[in-house]
Image (cartoon, rainbow, N blue to C red; front, side, top):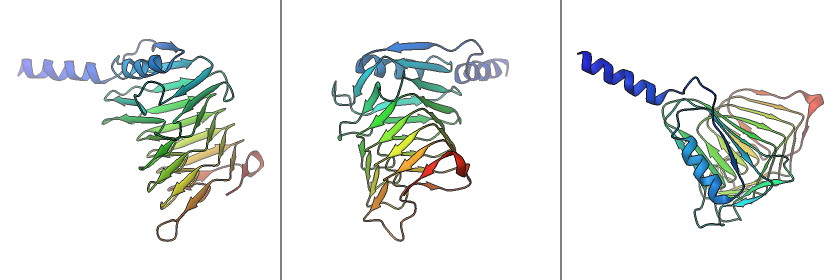
Length: 227
């Protein structure tokens, strides 16, 4: 019995985040971004990836979508200098980002960067996540999903969006969420959501601008909302 309990303790130590300071990864190339996402998913800490100015395209190295697949209770932040200077692109070929965490519910943060020209035949043209989301000072634009929900992005959890632009995203042959789809609640402040559409929607089609399943909070004086 003692051996069995010790085994459980070891497993818990592996799966739960270390209480120490998370790691900061500084990246400047597509390959470094891929490696940092892989490393962050394995180190047992909440991490920050800081992207140098430039464009990181999924087609640069033939690797396709940037993937973060984790089984730890650890948050992740991707941070640029500004939405104008740091661009993650799907090159109209791939979904840009895919964030998935097994078992746990964590926070994915995207700060001061752009996600654009993503294309997917599943949920989330720009990006998809099973987790909760925080977006700040960012631009999500010109992304398309074909037969999925959430042209710009799809969030299974809840979302907090501030000081950001979500524009010109398309959910084609879809049920809902031209700009984005949020499976939980969403808080939107000081942001512009414009020119997002659903085309050839199944059934009634819901939310050319966006679709939030549970509760939406958005101070009317702080944002501009255009379908």
